[in-house]
Each structure stands twice: as structure tokens, then as C-alpha cells.
Amino acid sequence: MHTVQSQLFRRPIHWGICGAGKISTDFAIGLFQNGSCVHAVASRGGSGAQEFVQKFAACGQNIGHSFNSYEEMFADPDLDMVYVGTVHPTHHQVALAAIRAGKHVLVEKPLCTTLAETRDLVAEARKVGVFLMEALWTRCFPVTLRVREILASNRLGPVRAVSADFGFYLPFDASHRLHSKEMGGGAMLNLGFYPVQWAVFAFGGQMPNHIVAAGRLSPSGVDLQGGATLIWDNKDHTGDSKVGTSFGVASLTFGFSCNTGETAEIICEKGSLCVETPAHAPTKLKVVDRTADPFARPGSGCCEEEVVEFPLEELPYHTWAHPRPGLSYPHGEGMMYEARHVEECLSKGLLESPWYPLDETLVVAQIMDDCLHQINRPSPANLADRCQGLVLLGVPDKTHSWAND
Image 1: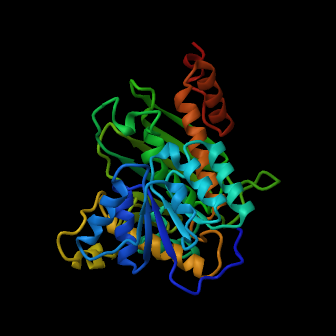
Image 2 (image 1 turned 30 degrees about the vertical axis):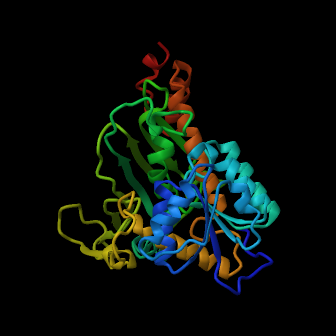
């Protein structure tokens, strides 16, 4: 991981927000809760930026400047850090301009809509020497930090399986952003991202050895619903599994066809960690410890359970005077944790987040790209290749005959 930058901040970090929509509203709430300096907001033309400033001024939260172009804001010498909350297809262009202006950048997820653009943005940030992070706020919640701590302690043994999902019911509307290819729609980019990152997180940030994905497409051509199986076999050069390391299978589902439980369960040899709903912005964790008798079958009662909670109602937003800006997304006030983490990284001179380094961002992007390729091209030859892949994993090829029809 690239860690050291030349400049350390000796004053409050001056943030600039690109985009004046829903996600930017929630992030600005997070910044103000953190006591951060929101130096400016920019939107492309119109009165969006000015209205954004006025919305926060009404509850006593002040934004220093408003700009009608991102380029104008990037030229401000007092600006340090840029948050990109624009629509997905513009992430690469806007973030690239900020990076080349010498600004540190936090880009809303997905970092980019294609693997090629993701690689390009990471390479450019590393070349220029500025901080870059994909805004995976999930990694900054106290629940996730507790999960990280337990996994690192090896208290429950190595990870063997992950089960994660994220889905909600969204009736088809070709004009809706989530159903539009041009606007970066699709279930994988918008929802599947979260189950994928939970799996990668659990298996140490490594690329899986095998990926099998399938799904349904909407009339507009985006992925409507999907599932993926990721396999980490962690073989060494002899073909044997490395003793004591995490290897196993992740089963992931995502889509706009129905409301799912939206949990993430990480199952270890001697227990499990269940991140309860909503797992993308978690406040509750159930720890099942089977170390006393790891051979006891489920339902035998031979385990200890602990529930850990971090209520968001205790965050500063809930004490603000009315009229205060409403939250656009459930648990949106939890973006405070992400804002705090980024500022801590910059104060330490880091160029990447240790909680979600850029190499891991690239792994997640590669997995999503592979899954989308399989979902979008379910040809007979493609299915045959995937069935053959399962045969190599020791799965009987019971579907080979119809896969080639």
C-alpha cells in the first residue's frame, strides 16, 4: 500500500463537495457532525450549489462557497479534499480532474463504472501522489471495525464461508437511474458491490480463485437480479491448502426484484459473525462463539452468543435544530465515520485508507467486472466454460449436456 505523502495538515482540512444531490446531502451531514470544514460545494450550472448552501444554513451549518463548475472549485488554492457525489458515469472524469489539480479525492462508490477506468484513476492518483479512496462507508462503521478486530485475533479460527445479500423491490421504469445503462444502473454496480466487498473483506482482500455468476437482465439491458459464487481455494505450489489460513466459499445475491434480509454472515471454523440488517450501514453484530465445542452441531446449544450495538441515534445529527436537511438514505448520518476516517488518514500523511486500500478496490472492481461479463453473456459456450470450471473444482458436470444444446 502506498502510504506517505509530502504534506501533513496543520490546519482543518478544507473539503469541497462535487454534486448537490441526495448522496452529497448525507455526506455533508456526516462532515458537519464530524466538525469538519465544508469549504465549498459545486454543481454544473443552475442554482443547485446555492440551494445546497442555503439548505444547511437554515440549521446553522455553514458552507463557505458555492461554484457553478467543478473546475472552478478545483482551482481554489484553499481547497484540500474533494468528495465526488455525482452520478456514476461521471466519477472518472470528475475525479481525474480533481487529481490532476492536486487535490485529495474521496469518490462515491462505485469508484468508476468500468474496470479500465478504475485502474486508470488509481494509477493517476499514485502518479500524482494524492490520497484516493472509494467511499465504502461500510468499512468505517464501528460494527465493521469490531468484525475486523475479531477476525484478526483468530479467536474464531479461519474464515470458511460468507453469505451476503442486498436487494430491494424496484418496479421497472426505463427512465429510472438504476435501470439505465447510460446512468450507471444495474444491480451489481449499485447493490452487488456491498456483498462482494464483504466477501473480499472476510477473505483478506485477496482475489478469489474462481468466480461463477448468473442473473437476469431488465428490458433496458442492465442486470436486474443476480447471484455469484466466489471460491478461495488458497492452494500453495504443491496443490495443498495452506494450514490455518482462510479459504472457502462466498454465496452472494443482489437485485431489484425483491426485498432481501440484507445481512452478511462470516462463518469461521469455530463460530460466526452476523452483521445484521442493513449490512451496508451496520449498527448491530451477533457473534456466535463455538470455541468451547467446535464439533457441536448447530442447534445443540453448545455456543456462546453476544450482540453488539452502536446506535446511530447517539450521533450529533439528532440534536440539530429544525429545519434540518433530511437524510436521503437509511443510516445516512453514519457517513460521519467515513469523514472522520479520511481526515485521520490525511493527518497521518497516508495516501490510501488502510481499511480499504486501493489494491482491494481493484480486486472488488475485477470481481464485479467478471460477474457482469458472465451475466451479460449467458451464451451456450459461456455456460459450458463455466460448467467446465465447476468440474475442475470437483463438481460433477451434470449440466454439461444442456449447456451445449
